[in-house]
Length: 79
Image 1 (cartoon, rainbow, N blue to C red):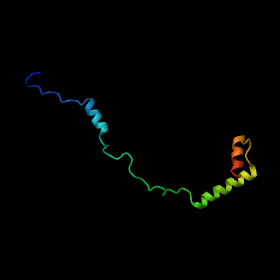
Image 2: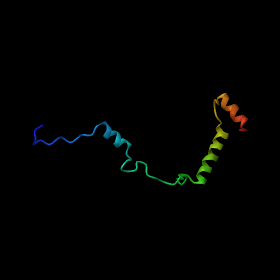
Image 3: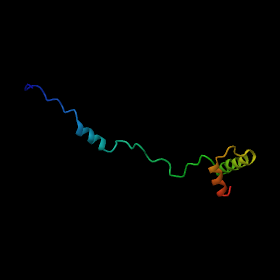
Image 4: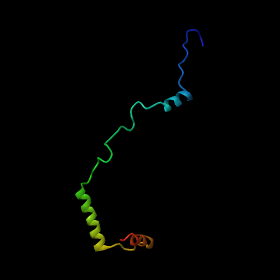
């Protein structure tokens, strides 16, 4: 290197990369959203309608080819 040349700036390296990875992110990658339990896509009435319809379908159509272990568990549970 001659006296008039400036030294090249250091380009980083392993230590610098590790420091960048360990540093906290500039922006929060997962900002807080809704408070838990506040999201209600269905009303209580909608849920009840779905439940009653599923019971009606099971009563009218039944289930075909129920696996033996499933039928045993259902009967043991009082179904």
